Length: 188
Image 1 (cartoon, rainbow, N blue to C red):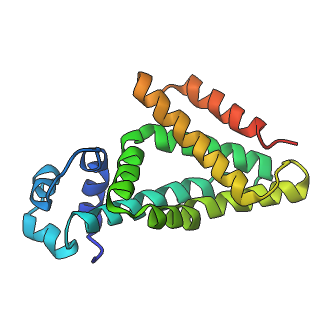
Image 2 (tube, rainbow, N blue to C red; image 1 turned 90 degrees about the horizontal axis):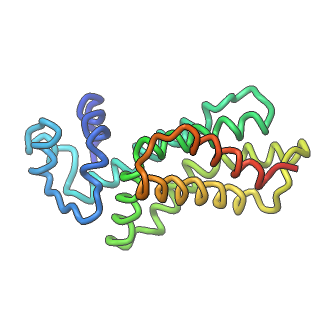
């Protein structure tokens, strides 16, 4: 896989929800039409649909990681965690179909292990760093930071996807309540 130019990457990223919808079996020709690109251009950057989905996975994981690492980096751990959790809820709430699509892709292609490894490396690691700093400062009561990070990520993802399925995304009151609930689970 070659890295597409920024404009094409942006258009693919913006179309992710449609591209990754479970049950959607788009060929690169279909994707090209959707994002306003030539079929040959997509084939230049991606060997096939799996290659494209891998690119989208990396893009979304990088964006989620940026939400965490950019969350009040100079603040105390409890403030950083609140900002990171709220940011992740907003991030997932803006693209819940992408999460479902990536999970569906991972299961359908037998790549759950690779997706989980990417999640650990890109998203859970910066979250663990905040949790470990808070544990050292005495503001978080956690055991293993890996388990705590996974519990937080799981809670955010399941709750956000559940709300999206029932009522749609974008409810600020839901985001605030979920942030408070998640933080209560680790506060000392």
